[in-house]
Image (cartoon, rainbow, N blue to C red; front, side, top):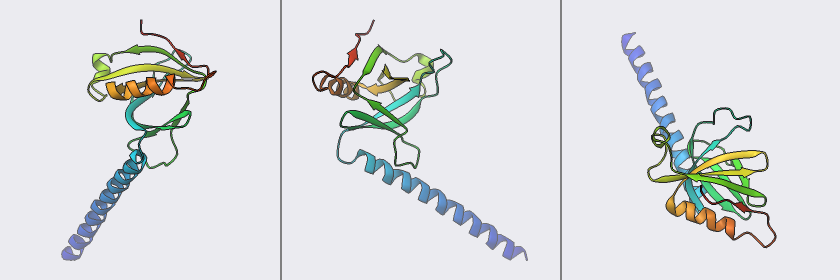
Length: 154
């Protein structure tokens, strides 16, 4: 009886370890697929609430440029569709700053934060210097007549 219980517990533990390994492998494959083909950058995102409430939490993700939109996917997730889509047309960049010491603990090292408004959506993106340069270049490369507002940092 005791041996059978130990074998059952070992089988359950082995199944849990296998499940965890499969989940990890599927997230790694998803991340590789998102980064494949270029146009992808690591950036954290948090949603700002229009009512002036506390901002959301920072989420680590991958931004992928697709034409006139930046598709943002969470790193730790399984969805193939983006969590946020930021459209270049009508985009307003209103603030660029360094993270507060409290914020810096939850972000990648050496990032800058930029506030972006796309219609009713208002978010902050935290990116490294190279990713920030690429993002601003992408904005400035908008087709003629596209209303993109870039406000210099104060």
